[in-house]
Length: 224
Image (cartoon, rainbow, N blue to C red; front, side, top):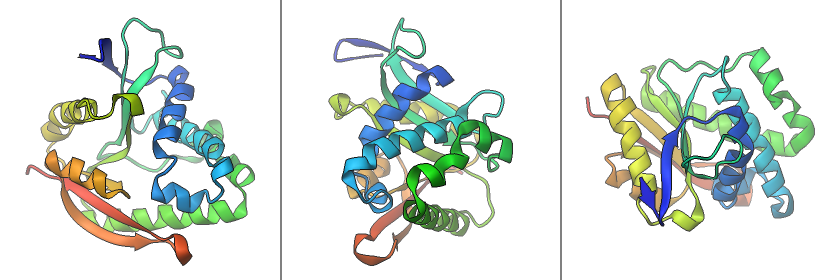
């Protein structure tokens, strides 16, 4: 795969990639309405996002306890930890179950209340609870792939990289499994992007309280 004269490979992330992956994710999601709602102070949002997203990677995608699958576009011939990550997507498979206590300890996620503060954690819990409720409502106890996050380096957007990465995963993972795939997004432009790839809006609602509420779309891909 070659974009902008860069040779790229699709690989699975390793723990040594998590620092660079968290930077890419934090930059990509800094202005996401959900994160603006959770992390109110823009001066600390980047730092807290980066810490929380790295902890989430460790919680869900570290070897031995991995309960998710991660895919990234990286520069060829670069070692983990040094290879620039140009795009990535992380999935929870249909057999996903919530991380256990040991995973929460080793990932550092239990430190979130001390890192984020009480009010931020309350808003985070509010958003996560709402999203879990939407997933349960849409799936009605059926299993599905869940796109935990997806991001493309700002410099490479508009080149078809996100489309190529997601189509590869739909064709190689989702469709052969026989299960649908769902995702959440809080941006209307993202909705149109996913609709072009075959996703349909399954649920639309407002999340949050006060002036900073935001719209959340749940989309589903189902070829059954």
